[in-house]
Each structure stands twice: as C-alpha cells, then as structure tokens.
Image (tube, rainbow, N blue to C red; front, side):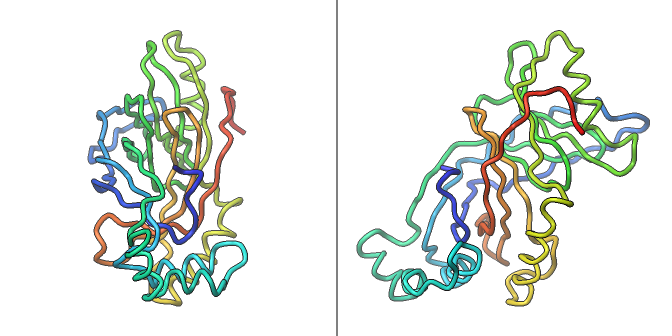
Length: 248
C-alpha cells in the first residue's frame, strides 16, 4: 500500500496514533527499553477523492506532486469530478489498506513494540526507527535522538543490540533528518500556513513505517481541523534500511 501513496491522498486511521504517557527516567536512559505493548491502529485505509476534504486534497495534490497544477487532476477532485466518481468509482476510493501497530516516541528512551505486522511511528526529528529480534521475537523500536548527550539513544542502543546475545538487528533508518529534510518540510509548512490549512510548522508530522516484510517508508502528513483521524499526505518516500551496528 505504501508504494501507492501520493501527495493529496488521505490516510484514515481506525484509531488515533497516541504517544505513550510515562515518567522520564533519571540518569543515563540511553539503553532503556520501555516496551509498553502494542497499540493496534485498528486498520489504516489510504483513500483518494475524500468526500469531506476533497478541495484541500486537490490543492495538495496539485501543489506537491510532480507536474503540479494539472487541469485533469483539478477536474477529478472538483465537486463534479467527485460526483462522477461517486457513480463510477465511489468517493473515498480505497487505494489500499493494512492492519498495523503503533510505537510512540519517548523522550530520552527507546520504546518498542512486539509485532509481526506493519508498524508506524511519528514525530521524528533525527530519531531512529529500528527493527530487530529479541529471543526470536520481532520488535520495532523508536530510538530517541537528543541534543543532550545522556538523552540521545542512537549509538548506545545499536551498541546494546550488538553485544546482546539474544538480539539480532534486521535494520534501521531515519525518517527525518533536519539537515537533509528541512528544505522539504519548511516550504511545505509555509505553503499550508499561507493557505490556512494548518496553523504552524508543527502541524506537519513525519511518520516512519516498517512493513511486515521489513520494508521502510516515511511520509509527511497533516490533520485538517475537526477531521478526526484523517491525515492528508504531502510527501512520501521509500527508505533503505541499514543492517549495520553503526551510526555516523
């Protein structure tokens, strides 16, 4: 499904991705594993031609897809175009769907879920997303990044996996790196703010995905006001995971 996502498509979560609540540990927390169990997202649908936010989706599709401002695309997303699709292909046309779990970000910690399914996480700003096994149980982790040395988990967690006889690294990647990705995210936020679709840059969220087949993706999305668990995608990319116990 994630190969098919384009800017302007909507990801509809059956349950809202919720960040975990917990007390920040004191001292050196960099190799702490805080597994809290799975959060089932109750299914994710990728849809086009949303019946409720079609105009926003059309604007995003035209602005952020290659070859923007395409008349046929605007017509397809227009009121008449959506009415036509309601008769022929249906509004809220399902591009794909998947059952998935969610692992949340924990400041200064590594949080994981045991899951054999596709796993999503969000709110990346340099953190790692890692898939590995522990005693032959598949885990997916959100490994916190921080400018505070004793709160940054990246090096220590990979080193922990290397020296833990019960663990085996499958791969890791960074969904968002400021030096690499700010040139994409800041102009996106500016355009959305200028068009009154969001209120500030933090309304655009970077998600990471590791599928059940251990294929990695990242996407940026925002949630229009009062639209429940519908997120409009502005950027998506396939990522290659590193199998190395090293981070530079």
